[in-house]
Every structure is written in structure tokens, then in C-alpha cells.
Length: 199
View (cartoon, rainbow, N blue to C red):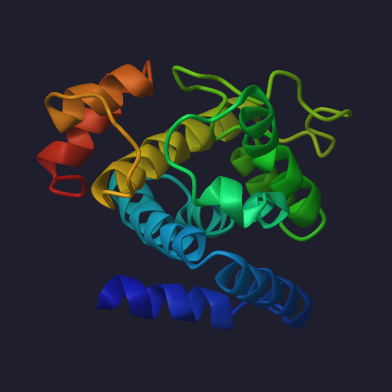
């Protein structure tokens, strides 16, 4: 329950404009597609827990996790509900959600926007292919953004696997599957499993 309490406290401590924008976007997502909303909630909690364990900035990771799929507000529900046999156009639409989310939150959470923009960039299927211009307009430390985005990608994939949402995931040991799908994160993934943050 402590993580949920911390989550609520972080939301409450936001300045009025940020709080209003954040709760407004989350309310829209809840109304648009409840599974996507629940997924964002779960990923935000795992982001909080994992970032504290690894020594990342927990506030930045929490809000990046909370809003990482907010761009799915621009994806038709029939595509979000689909599980197999995606067509080329459907893939194109769903692969735009990081860019769509970035556009929605970059003025509210500029660092977190850079992270969520890249949360599928370091995956076995990498997207978006090109980043919006200008890239990193605020001059953030790109190593830190990449580090956060890689962790977010792991937590995003882990929660998707754990929800048994109908997608077909590769068979095998969960830790090894995640490591294959999120290359270069083997050590972090093992640490998270060893600590019981991922199971």
C-alpha cells in the first residue's frame, strides 16, 4: 500500500497546472480505453519501485511510467482491442503512440516526455524510426534519458506480459524473454528479478 500512497502524494504535490493536465489526460484515457489506463497505473507503480531500488530519479520515472502510453488516446479503440493479425496500417497507427504522447506532455513534463518518446526505441522492434525535431530541445543529459527509457521499456513489457492481455508472447523463462525483447538490459533485469520487483 505504501507505493500507492506515495503515488497519490506525488500527484497531490504537483503544481496546480501540472496536476490539472495530468489528471485530465488520465481521465480521458480511462474513458477511452480502461485496459490502457490500468496498464499505465501498473507501470507507474513498478517505475516507482524499480527506480528507488536502482537509484534512478523516482519522480521522473514515476511520471514517465504514468504517462508512457497516453498517446494511445489517438489510437482507435478497435486497434487497441485487437490482439493478432495486425495489418501494416494498424502497426503504423499504434507505433505512433510515443510521438503522440510526447506532443501531449512535452510542455508539462519535458524530461519525462523525452523518456516516454523513447520507451520503444531500445526494443527488439524499435520505434519511432525518427524523433521529432528539434531532438532534446531542453538539452537534457541523453545518457540519463536513455537509461530511464530503457528501464521504462522493460517495465512496460513486463506488465504487458503479466496481464495476460491476449497478445502472444514468446515462450520460455520470463526473465530471458524480457532480456531478448529489451536488449542490453540483462544485468538490470536480473537485479530486478533477484530483488522480487519483477517475478
